[in-house]
Image (cartoon, rainbow, N blue to C red; front, top):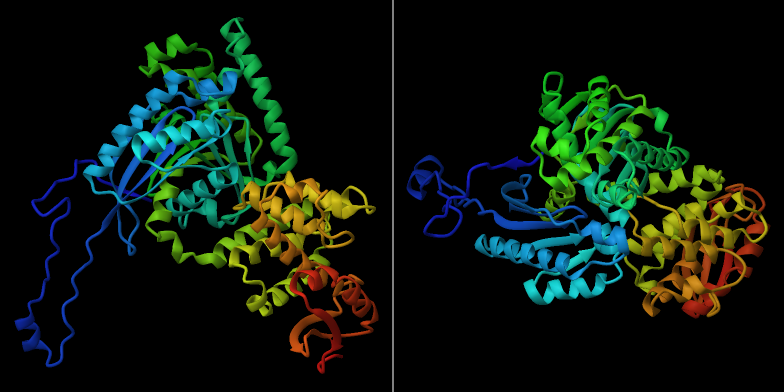
Length: 557
């Protein structure tokens, strides 16, 4: 959880931070220790910033960064700009909205310069991502303010939100015991993740954004009651889609983010509990509060609750979305942590999350990939063995392929899921796998990542990459070269389990007289694996220019 300084930052003559004092002088140190270490001067924290351009507001958070501690927020600023109102109504941002955004970002830039911010990350989400004039707008921001804004996709939104929640709820029962549903209802979309003992198993971005939902009814001129009925029906339909993808009924915990939930918690103050991890709202009072809010139109909400117009317009859609999801779960309360997408950005900027390491991220990705495989009834034993053999080949071929650890992870995901197309039809299942993976979500992987995974999985059998293959040709040249290398490794790994009996447990590569010798450690008759390896090494020979020979290892049983 972030430490927030509510008072303004004091500026010292030497800069925005006081000089660090050394508590032990060299003279006293010599008297107490004949061979002392020189005193360590504590490194002054640097200042970082995060900017989140959402559908209903633009947010800036400035924080002190210290690798040993979590970020300490020293200033926050928010400007209500309804980017989503334009995008979700007519598909593009109009001139007035862009100008309002540019002025807000100019103010944010001045704040950042005041604190001497050098490292920052500015991101834009669905309202900008879906706008037809997205690229033009991002270029105008760069030229006008000097800020480099990154347009992130839904999977990155999910990941950053999860990073913030994991930090804010460290040790909380929602991340330790049972299953939990993590819900972030923003202006443009709903970020939904299903967590099993704190690990993301399913995740996705859904059309549950409060601004998006409101704009879908902007042309309807019926009564307030009729609008609420239509809104509930629309939300119900989306929740039905989510229920088909995630086991909502199994969720015992419900974690929700957003200003609208905090507003609800404040209004249900008599029964809301404040804990070290944030706020907790019992289920029954929350449902009753939603029913009460639904009875009021926007004008009455502005007057009675003293809300700004923009917040009053989006309050009902946001609370209704949370309400519909909550009743689908077994949770008896809502946990509202101090977490946000900006919080995830800050944690990454300050490297606090680096303690969790690449292995932690890899485990989350593979858990989500395995859940996707279960959805399509994959052969788990075969998939895991092929993934293991592919990793062994990848690691031993590093000097030849020159690929990164990110490529290694994408290969592992493709190896786990290469046969999911059988769910559609055994015939041509490699093509079915390409389609299913290209439209699926795996936690932590972007759309481009999933396109690579889809292509690699497609080429685990049959034809090698061709110029007539549209998905493959949609990638740039360097990415296609990477796909070729990964697919060639997957083809060989898959061949080494041709019988789906996991007879080969390990594999070693050696280079002898211009040929790669695949030495297999396993049990039983390996004739099928030998024949399959030699026939499916065609792409590997084409990519690396070396032939393959098969040899049974000395440890064969």
